[in-house]
Structures are given as C-alpha cells and as structure tokens.
Image 1 (tube, rainbow, N blue to C red):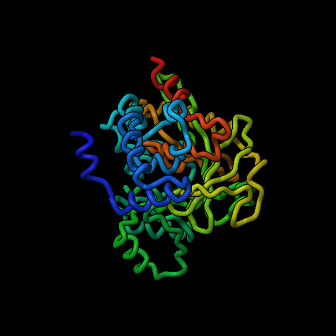
Image 2 (image 1 turned 90 degrees about the vertical axis):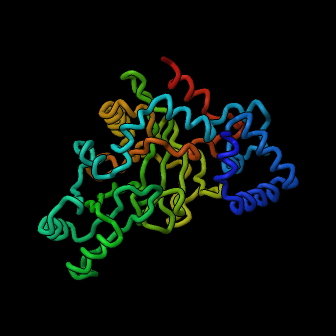
Image 3 (image 1 turned 90 degrees about the horizontal axis):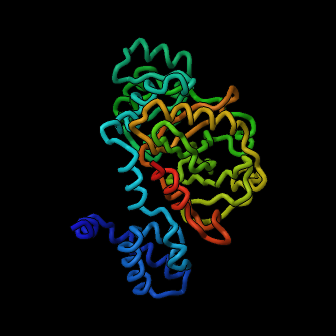
Length: 330
C-alpha cells in the first residue's frame, strides 16, 4: 500500500529526466538504472533523487547501507519529533517569538501589527527582508528597499504577496561578506536533543551564488565544515558541480576558516533545549558583526545536504551510523 501511494505521487517527467542524467554519467542503460532505483527503494528506503544525489550507481551494497535516505530521515523525525509542535518551526513569526532571545534583530508580522507599526518599522529599516510566514526553501523571500515604493503601494504589495513577515537585515561579518556579499551565508547545524543531552550531528556552510539567498534549491552552494572549523572539501550545487573557489567572488573555499564556530555551537545547544518536543532539527545560523544569530529552524532537516559524493571521498561512507548512534542511544 505504501509503495502504491508513492507511485501515485511521483513526478514521472522529473524522474525520467533524472534517469537520463544518471544513465549519461554512468554509461548504464536507463532500464538498468530504473530497476536498481526500485531495488534500492525497497532495501534502503531511498528515492530516485537520493540515488541521483548520492551517486548510488557507483556504490556497493555495504556503502549504500550507510546512507541516510528519505525513509531513514523520516524515521528520525518520527522518533525524535512531536508533530503537534511543528507549528513552532513552520510559522516564522511563532518561531521568532519563541526564540526571541536568539534572533538579535527587529521584525514585524503585518498580520498582527498595526499600520503605524509598519510605518515605524520601514522608517527605522529602509532596507529589509520580506518573507511569507509559512513557505519553505526560500520561496517568496525578497530584499526590499522601501525607497523604491510609495508607502501605501509597498504595504499593498506585501499584503497581496502574503509577505507578512518583515525582518531587519543582518549585518553580516566581514569574513562571510568577503566570500559572498549579496546574500546572508548561513551555517546549517543539525542537532539531536536526546532526553536533554544535545549532540551536534552535522554542520555545513551554505553560500549564495549570484542571488540574494543562499538556499540550495535556488542556486546556492554548500560545503562541509570540518571539526577544526576549516573547509577542506569543495562546495557543491544542486547538480553536484564542484567549486574550489567561490564561482561569483573567486575567493578560495578550500582552506577557508569559518569564524565564531565555538559561539555557534553554544548557541544551537542552548536553543535545542527551548522546544524539547522537537529533538531532531536543523538550525540556520547567520554570523553578524556582533556574533551568531538564528535565522530559522527546520523540523525536518534537508538530509540531501549530508552526503554529497564530493564530501565523502574516498571511502563514500554515509552518516547513518553516526546519526543512529546519537538518535537511538536511549
């Protein structure tokens, strides 16, 4: 029944295009790839995008068994997270209110704020970020300069587009500005709160690449942050292209040292205790000139970031053993 439901929900055109890409890069027939995808789905709980992103066609059975796939990630969420509390993370104004001690910037929710409060906000922050309150993956986020609009027309535009959440721009630290200065480059940190014991499972640096946001699904790139807070592996985009230098700024990515990581770790460990009902989550942390601050939290972290081939060479061992040890420890 489960697989029948999955088959009904598939985007077959997209899947066909992915099959062609895998076939081209592997020199294996599309029929062979399709059969292998179906087998991996049943054995490892992976989808065709898992197969594509993780390069499963090049991995043996032992390697494949170490990967966090769609089903395994969902199982982590079922084990650690209470869906009754998802609204805390999903509704952005609720999140900002809950974590007000950690956002360190001004904001207003037009659904609840008065028109006079709107006027005060745009007079104090002539440039700001406008967001929908419940969209994901960077959808609907826009940097706005109020000088480009009349006051009334801007208010109408924001309400018509349901961009009810207005946030003060973060003054990004010089190190990350040098890397890419047209977006806030965030650090994704995945934490596990297991009965009050908080562990950091994963950390990476997400960077904008020509656009105004760093989201991976909108042209952004990312790379893993090592335990010494340095970067030793290339950045990747959604298609797996690799970059040793930032493609826009030309700054070296390999060898880049990410600042303030000690403070970032302290911040996420403290925040992970605020809503213990969400024990497994991914925090997006910005580095302002005055220190780290939280941008948002994902109650279903994007596991596709965890295991890109460029970051697991040469052994291609996934992160499932590490995650299992912390999530199923009690």
